[in-house]
Image (cartoon, rainbow, N blue to C red; front, side, top):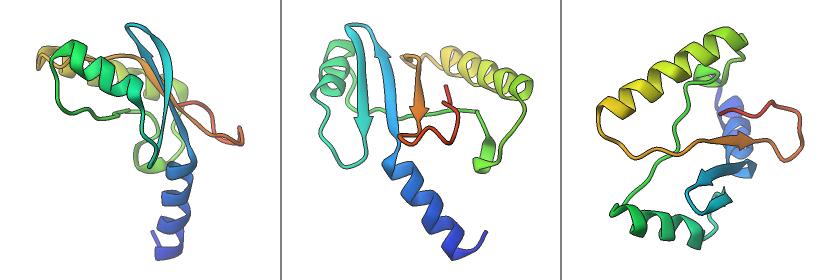
Length: 102
């Protein structure tokens, strides 16, 4: 991947909206913006840090639906085995050009 491609991809990820279906309702995460809802979820769960993970479209390369779903199920299973607290959500393209990634 070229430096220009990386920069374009970085910009796309930073513009994205990340929906979290938390225990008290749905909220959005946006790069470089404070999200009090995320802090509330962390506090309620007794956690100090969080991460957004997906197995969809590895390396930002479009992948077929069946493979994406299987990879996501495997990721969720491994996280559950590791005892991680997880909530569903999706990465959303504000322009609607890229499909939502659970």
